[in-house]
Length: 344
Ligand code: ADP
Ligand code: GN1
Ligand code: MG
Image 1 (cartoon, protein in one colour):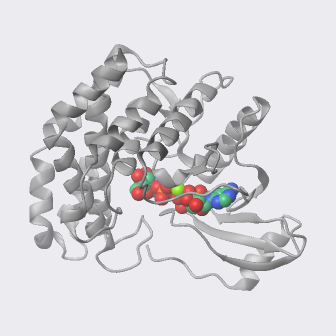
Image 2 (cartoon, rainbow, N blue to C red):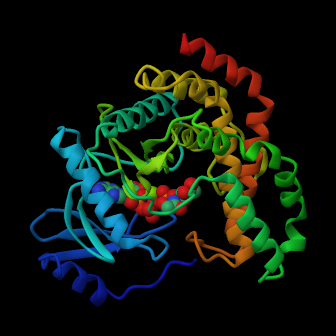
C-alpha cells in the first residue's frame, strides 16, 4: 500500500479532537510499515506522535489492548508509551524525548540491549490481570496459515506476477515441512502461550544514550510464543543490511550479533522452558521465513498490506528475508552451540 495522503487540515482537525490546537508542524515520521505516523511540534514545545491506525486491525480490540498494556506497565513504574488520547482511528502519544530508534544496528551492544528490553517486556506483562488480551490479528505468526494465504494469492495472481517469483516460491516450498513445528508444539502444549510483543523488530524499541529503553509499537501485544519474539529479533537485529537492500551479497545474519542477542536475552528470560530454549536458534529462521512469505503474499496480492515506496518493494523485501534464512541455515550448528553455551 502506498502511503495515503493527508491534508494538513485533516491532521490538524484530528489533533483538535485531542485538545491540541497549537501545532506548528505535523509531518510524516518513522519507517513503520503499518500505521500512518506523524511527528507533531507545538508552540508550547511539547511534541507528540499522531497515528492513524490502519484498517487491518480490529480497532476496538486494539484500543482496549493498548490501554490495558500501557496502564499495567505504568502502574509498575516501567517506562512505556504515554497515551494522550485515543479515539479510533486516531491516537496521540507523547513523543519519547531523548530516545531514538534505528532500522539497522551497527553495534552488537545494541542487539544485547534490545534483547534485554524485549525479555523485560515479557516479564512485565506476565502478571497482567485477567482476562487475557484478545488477538488483534488472529493466527498472526501461524506459518502454516501464512502458507495457505500465499497459496491463495499465487493461485489468484491478480497482478500477473507469479511467473516472475518462481524461484522464491520454490525456496519456500522446500521449507514447508518445518513451517508447522512451533504451531504444532504450541497446540500440543509443549510450548507455552505467553503474552508477547509479536513485532520485535529493531525499530520497535527506542534507546537512549545511557542504554535505557522503551518498547514501542504495542499493537500486536497479545497471546503468542516467546519464540516469535526472539525470532524476530534475530531477523532484524542480526541483519547485516536493510530489510530492503537490493544487493543480496550484502545480506546475511551476523553471528556476533546473534551471540549478543542471546547474551542479552537469556539472563532476563528465566521464564523460558527447556523446549523454548532448544528452539531459540530455529525461531530466527522460522520467523524470517514467515515474514518472507508475508512480503511475497502481499506482492502477489498487489501490495495491499505493507506500506511500499515503489513497485517491487515487497519482492525486494521478500528476497532479503529468504537470503537471511539461507544465511541462518548455513550457520545453524554454530547458532545452536551459542544458545547452549549461554543457556548453562
Ligand atoms: P508502525 O506500526 O507503522 O510500525 P510504530 O508505532 O512502530 O508504527 O511507529 C513508527 C515509528 O515512529 C517508530 O519506529 C518510531 O521510530 C516512531 N515512534 C513511534 N512512537 C513514538 C513515540 N512515542 N516517540 C517517538 N517516536 C515514536
Ligand atoms: C510490520 O509495523 P511494523 O513496521 O513495526 C508488521 C510486522 C512485520 C514487519 C516487517 C502489524 O511491522 O509483523 O514483521 O512489518 N506489523 C504488522 O518489517 O503486520
Ligand atoms: Mg513499528
